[in-house]
Length: 179
Image (tube, rainbow, N blue to C red; front, side, top):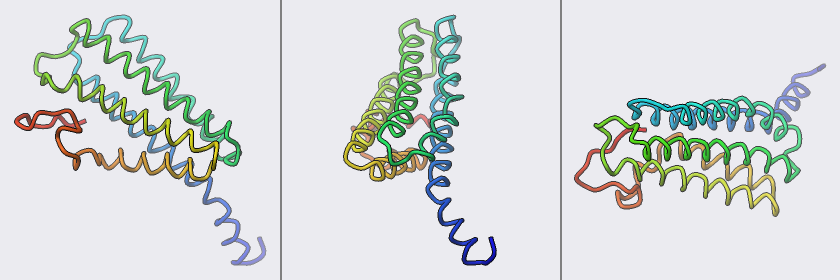
C-alpha cells in the first residue's frame, strides 16, 4: 500500500469477507441460544441426547471451514450450499435432541405445555427460511447470501416476538418463555 486510496480500496474489497464473518458469528450466536434454551429445559439427559449434542458441537466446529469456503467462493452455488447444509444439520440435530428429550420425558416440570411445540416450530420455520434462501443461490448467490444474513439478523433480534401469538404457537394467556 502506497496511499490512503489504495488502503481504502483494499478494505472495501474485504467487505464480502466481513459479511461472511458476521454471518458466521450470528449463526453461532443463534444456535448457541437455541441449544442453551433446550438445555435449560432439561431435567436430565440420557446417552442419546448427550451424543446428539456432541454431534451438534462437531457441526459447530465446522462453521469456520464452511465460512471460509463461502468467503473465498461466494460466487459458487456449492459454497452457499455447503454453508447451508451445516446450518440444516445443526437445526436437525437440535430438533432430534429436543424430540428425544420430550419423548423420554427428560424435561423439567416447569416447562409450559405449549413450549414443546413452540420450540419445534421455531426450528422448522428457521430451517424452512434458510432452505428457501439456499435455493435462491441457483439464481443468484449474492441474493442467497444476503437472504441468509437477513434471516439471521431477524433471529438475532428475536423478531418473532413481534409476530402474532398464534404464529408463534403460544396461547395468549401464557407468558412467553425466553429463548
